[in-house]
Length: 173
Image (cartoon, rainbow, N blue to C red; front, top):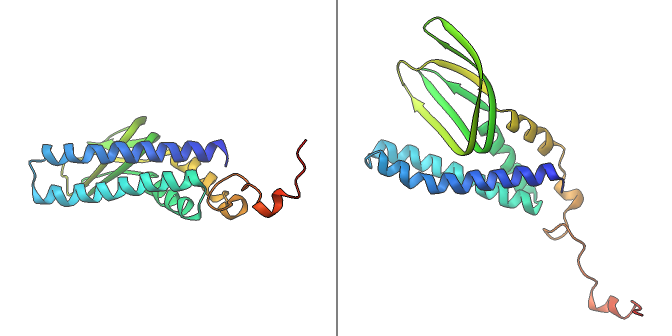
């Protein structure tokens, strides 16, 4: 497995683990409201997916590749608007964006570390922000070129030791 894929796996594991740990805090801070419980449950599932994807990608499995592609597609768009706002970051995120508010526009970069997510509906007064995650775009290219079947041997990346029948054929000095 390449260093790129190991890096993607580690970032997904870190982002997923921190996100899972952050969910109870979000629930407590929301006042344990039912609507917040539903949204935070969705966040929890997404962070569990990120952690699981990272673990299985590290192992080099087909499931890890597919789950990581889903996680990176979740991280790719950065949309904030009065109608819907959705941004997710796992591990590390850097994204350029265009922000428009009250007739003014600005171009900038945002940086996120560990885990971050926003999911809002009908949040009046929000600016319009459109962006995309650079690490997610790179990860999607790397994951597209990754063929787990080409290198996977019983779920690990090493050759298995010889069978007992083959020991007799080996000559040790």
